[in-house]
Amino acid sequence: MNESRNRRTKPMPEVVTSLPAHLQRSRGSQWGLLSVLILTAVAGCSDKAPPDAAPGEGRPLLWGNCPALPEGATRDPRQTCATLQVPLDYHHPDGRTLELAISRIATAKPDSRRGVLLLNPGGPGLGGLDLPSLAATVLPSEVLERYDLIGFDPRGVGHSSPVTCGLTDVSLVDLFPYPAADGSIDANVALARETAARCAASTSGDVLPFITTANTARDMEQIRQALGEGKISYWGQSYGTYLGAVYASLFAENTDRIVLEGNVDPTSVWYGTYHYWGEGMASRFPDAARFAAANNDTVHFGTTVEEVTEAYLELASRLDATPASIPGTSARISGGLFRTVTYSLLQRNEQIPLLVQFWRAIDNLTAGTPTAEDAALLQQVFAQEPARADVPADNQTAVFLSLACGDASWPTDIEVYRKKTAEDRAAHPLTAGMPFNIWPCAFWKTQPREAPVEVTRQGEHNILLLQNRRDNATPWESGLGMRKALGARATFVELDAGGHYVYGQGSSCVDGVFNTFLVTGQLPQGDVSCAN
Image (tube, rainbow, N blue to C red; front, side, top):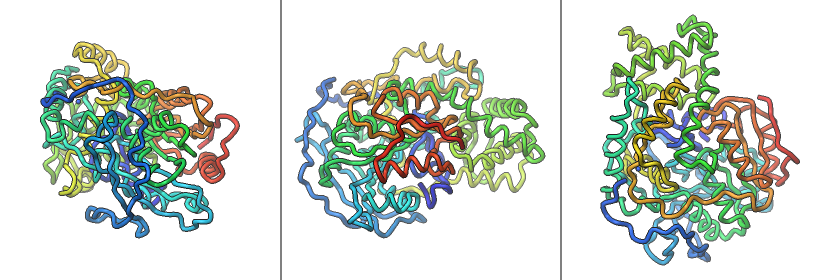
């Protein structure tokens, strides 16, 4: 969601990357999904689920001004904000608390109001405090009349008691662990170990184990209670689909109308989730390659999908061996960063022309013949947002790792990663072994405090799943995993399209089902296949 759903300018990986802001999506994450040597022991790990206590019951929210915006950002003047205290540890609800920042745009027609629509932008690690302002520009009036739009920064994120790993390099690019040019993962192992140790030693080291999806879902229940609502409706994308599914499993009786878009397989979090990326890129990349081939007079990568793919892989290998300096910046582009930008821009169809221009500019750069136009484009792509004094610079990274490593266990045997990375590198050259490579979670000594929440089929038929066929961030098989997990609770709508976004992308079929569901509660009798 940006100024317009059809003109969003911030793609974001589902496992998210901290690319420059205009390469991140503002509405919710893709992710592609993406851990820590705890120096201060955290007492009493338990796999027993905490009681469904209601410490927030009866606490009225005091609505007022929202936190100051970054320079250049805007929000709807109707949006107001409040804060809510929630337990750090739901096993001990009377202990230490965290503060959640919550926002609202109330319906302009109270007589038509059904309830609240809670929004989550994905990530993991993205803030959602200004999503009501963004959603108000995207949703049709018949939806806006029926709901108060509710946003929030999830625990640990943004203005909600933000956490840090104490990282000076705030880029998530290195956390997408592409092997070295020769396939070695030794450097990835060292970086993962170092990152995990820095997170553990940070000032948030004792809080990070509690930044989990299950706890965030419990926070959503506290928000529901504080709003005084019997039930909540919800719209989540990318990582937000897993969060919504966990909430709908823990608190099925409190769900009204749930929309999950660009779905995570809840049975594979998180180590297995990334393994979908190879197939996801293989299915999505030809869309961009066809565009490049059709514009070969300016792109010069070949006239067929095969020729373009070969030229792309050769350029990535060249950057693996010799990273290139970006004119006018201090940045250098490696093969890993080149692939990560490609992954990000592939999430939206309208950015494919920019993507192939980016390929052309990088090819010229490595050849030593960059044009002034190339330099301008690259400086735009790699422009950095101004630092924010109120949020740690590495906040998104810290939350991303906390969720990836705290929701479920990862293998700790380095040889497992070495073997699987080599196999995947051969099978999926576009992702070069990255999806099976090692993450900081392999060195995360504080084990998950509880087992992952089982996403169940128990509950009302009130969940709408939206999924593109060629989504490189949450690929098709991942969406099918969510569909299978929810069973008869859900209706599945597939769109024969590429990219990470389904609603608001020009399909009257998809948009009609979405809008009808939120307005009337009616879902199709069976799953739906929509043409683009």
